[in-house]
Amino acid sequence: MAFILHLLRPCDLFLDIGANIGSYTVLSAGAIGSRVISVEPIPTTFSKLERNVLLNSLVGLVDTHCIGLSSESAQLMFTSDQDSVNHVISAADHGPTILVPVMALDELLAGRVPKAIKMDVEGHELAVLKGARKTLADPALAAVVMEVNSSGERYGISDDALLDEMRSYGFKPYRYDPLKRYLSDWDSSTDNAIFLRSRSDVSSILAEARRYRLINRSI
Image (cartoon, rainbow, N blue to C red; front, side, top):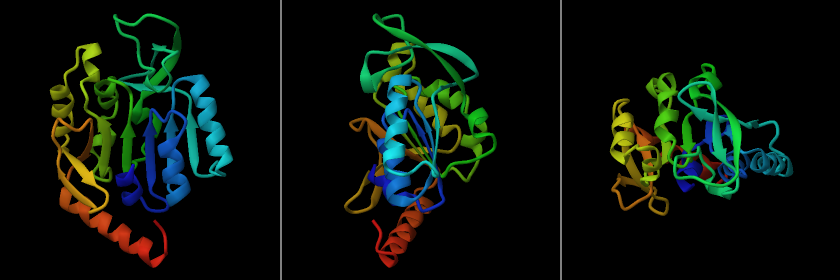
């Protein structure tokens, strides 16, 4: 969260995939003033996301969508009783489910390119990436924050497959020290990875954003 906070500036576009109740959405739009596209597939959770956007007076900055993302437009069954870890069902799942419309990320964005993407889709990451080819290939996308924690194994997807997909677009995984504002190489002991095409370029953006906020007495 600190990386997103330090990276974004007002009017940057941020894509929050798997927004849940809107922690990243409210942080980026409310604290920074960034524009946000916020995606949450579970209707009961989506209603809380919309309420948080309203309570924080962010309606003009946040575009909310009650859908899922995948490799193509379809309808997929999701679990519906697992709170923040609801996910596309697998063969091992039992319990309440809900049918959710999904679409490709490129279709949702319709030519818009975010500066950063946060993705929390509980193992469905590779399918989402398959539907984001144009966005991932665009150099205007600086960073993708994503879980790499073996959750894809429920669908037969390894972490290596996820890493290989990102590398095919020139992205490498890093971790971030928010106190030192320093990016270092990622390792598998950390569940979340920050994927960057260029550590030096993003480090320059972080330094520029820090100077901007010091001048403007912001975060």
